[in-house]
Length: 117
Length: 114
Image (cartoon, rainbow over all chains, first blue to last red; front, side, top):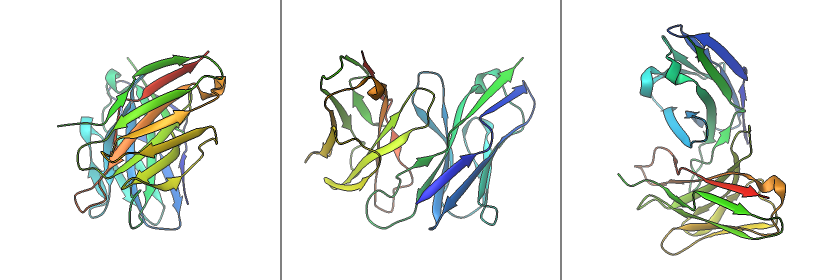
């Protein structure tokens, strides 16, 4: 089984400031890691994912995340945020297994990023 | 590119009624997942199907059932609806083959039970 902890439920920042949203996970098997963004009353949009290879992954809208296996972390970063980045951000993990359900996701509780002018 | 299609997008039901949510996966995807997201909550995994067979089960109430049909679309049937069933229900699909890299989500069905 997997679990995800998002350490901050809310992160307020000013426009053009850098931001880091923290995510730690727990799993007894190797994992795939994802960050999703959800705007109010909308669906889930994939920001980026780590499956294998380079531990630094770049996603859409200028976001990036670094997989740290020793610290079981997958923190999301953006060097300069915009008002339009205001949304709920979910970290999610899928445990690698054979057969189907390869991408069954366990989500964290979410972090509300609020970008203020 | 084709995406995951969910219908209806919005549904209002009364308590004790029945609801059916439909999900049409991306073509050639063999796995479907259902999630429930309550107000202000994270999405919770309900159930998944791989090649038309149930592959995993999460926190799905006994009042709910689901299946995947021969054309790979899936339906989530919810009976004896309760106020607490009001939520956003997401369907996602993925490919178990080597080309599969993630689960793709639909836009969700917002169910309101009154």
